[in-house]
Amino acid sequence: TPLVGVLALQGDVVDHCRALEAVGARSRTVRRPEELTGLDGIVLPGGESTTIDKLSRRFGLRDPLVDALAAGLPAYGSCAGMIMLADELLDGLGDQQTFGGLDVTVRRNAFGRQVDSFETDLDVVGIEGPLHAVFIRAPWVERVGAGVEVLASAAGHPVAVRQGRLLATSFHPEATADTRVHALFVAGL
Ligand code: GLN
Image 1 (cartoon, rainbow, N blue to C red):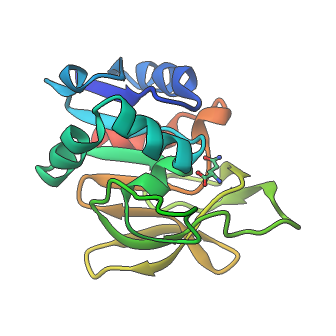
Image 2 (image 1 turned 30 degrees about the horizontal axis):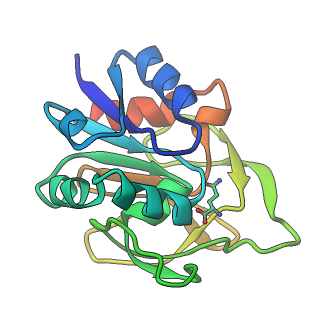
């Protein structure tokens, strides 16, 4: 049974733990560097990426997590978590930084004020049938590196991508009862 961490600095942590356990993984909330030890993967939840960036430094978690990702720790990032995984960020606030690992450029709050938050059904590579996707002040992907596969798009931009053992979605599967994105991640561990 894979042990999957859920970064628990801010955001919808409990819903990710529940989804991971529903697809047969064990989950562990991660707030301290020691809690990264022994993980088979980690989920970076949505929330507010500027806050996650700041808190990760305050908790001494930033450097160990950046190192773990660079060393190949599999990760799934949702929304703000996608931002944190991106190598390059557009429309970040001030000197906001990401953890990196995923060879993409992400634009924060990309869908803009008119369609701030919305829901839509998506076709996702690797998932059978439509997936109901909840977008909340979501980023989109503006550039994908050569090793990055686009799994789904919305409004003409990638909103689900995979690069090896890194998976990221602009939307929030943990906000629905559908656990297929978590299953996709856990199946790759
Ligand atoms: N707009 C948020 C950010 O910049 C992300 C929103 C979310 O995770 N639902 O981090």
